[in-house]
Each structure stands twice: as C-alpha cells, then as structure tokens.
Length: 116
Image (cartoon, rainbow, N blue to C red; front, side):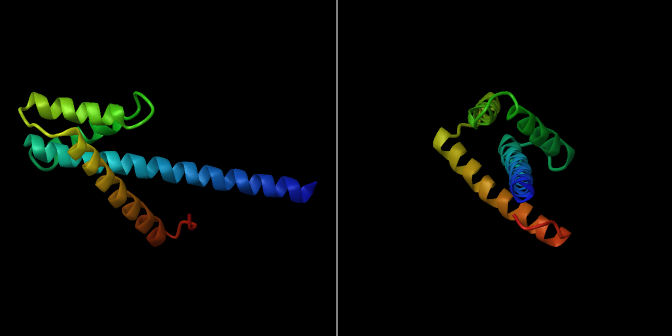
C-alpha cells in the first residue's frame, strides 16, 4: 500500500507541476501577444505596452479557451482603426505560444527548477 500511495503522490506532484507550467506558458503567451498588439495599436514602449499586456492576460481569465483573448485584441485593434484578419491574430497567438514555451523552459533550466 505504501508504494501505491507514494506513486499516487508522485503522479499528483507531476500533474501539479505540469498545470503550473501550462499556466505560466499561457500567461507569458498572452503577455507577448498583448505586447505585439500594443505595438500595432501604437502604444509607447514601456509602461503603456506593459499595462495593455496585463489587460490581455486578464482577458484570458474571463472564459475558457482563446476566444476571449482574440476578441479583446481584435476589438481593441478595430477601435484604433487597425484591421487584422482573425487568421493573422491566431497565427500571432500561436507564434507567441511557441516563444513563451521556449522562454519559460529556458527560465526553468537556468533557475535550477526540476525538468518538466
């Protein structure tokens, strides 16, 4: 029973680490996507872009999936007169996801975090 219990705890710990990793990658992805959109809108580098990126991160907490993030960015771009096709938005979101994964994994590797 002890081995079974230990194995269960090990699986739970791994699941928890994977969930945390997925959350961090998604948050980083949304930040990168927000920074891209902020540049398209014409916000000044620095605090304005960072603030907008945080708003994009927060938008992802409204509903499951990526549609809330896409809708926010699409609507914000449209309100500034910037037309971007949804396919381009989704492609940029995918690019940001790939970059975010690389950044988070590299950060974990340099910080000595356990491999995931």
